[in-house]
Length: 221
Image (tube, rainbow, N blue to C red; front, top):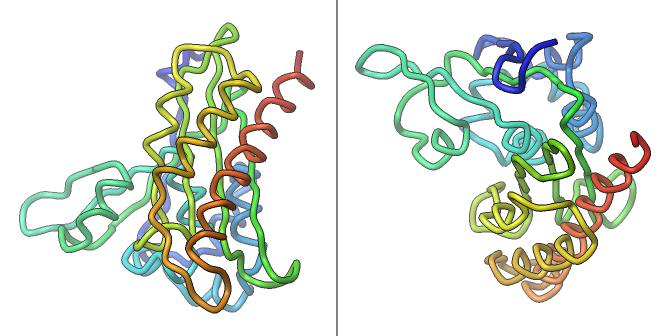
């Protein structure tokens, strides 16, 4: 059995279409969910990986899934290629073109949750939260929360996820992190929802996504 630090990663070239994620039998279920929601198949076949990473607004929930799963990017720049965390690449898009995307393979210790709010089931989400938690011996070792619709950017990780580390994934800790996310986000209102509505939904959906992780863990016990 492989240790936590030695699980394989898989790689997609930057010029392949998003549909390539779904064509892989080992594609994480979370990523499949994010790519097959409100994202039409035409977009999945026409948009290349490097284009999505340069313009996350094309499919923010897909980028959120990649962020939550801990993806990294190999960047072609003026110097030799460099591999960086996806969140660093998104923060500095001018650093170069995404030549390849790397995603850690699924492992039994990972749990995930997905929660969103939209006008109808087929509409793009107004706000979405994707949570990925890694547990070891009842303690949270890694936690990532990616949110869309509540930042000036299309998608971003919440710092509040770090508050889960080193302890159990309990109802009390989930509620505390959800409240911290609600304070952290910086939404702007539009015709789909006011800033106040988006902020409130960030907290509600964070709680729901993390509760899915908690339920998944109990079902595996």
